[in-house]
Image 1 (cartoon, helix red, strand yellow):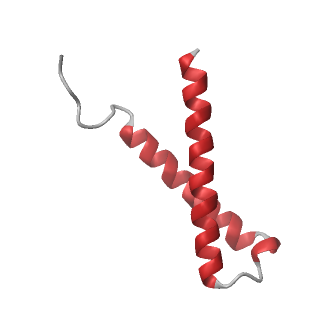
Image 2 (cartoon, one colour; image 1 turned 60 degrees about the vertical axis):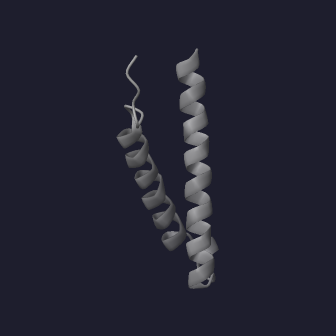
Length: 67
């Protein structure tokens, strides 16, 4: 049995994370709710939104594929 260092879908997941990160960047930069945040708050908010969005996307995909 051949062991793989990375999942065969690792590049897809990395691309998906980059897409979610860019969408989080756009959301924070354009939405009026984040207008008065400092640059540090915006940076942390983008990272939290991106990480949360990626975890949710990962769980949804894993739940849909396991059935």
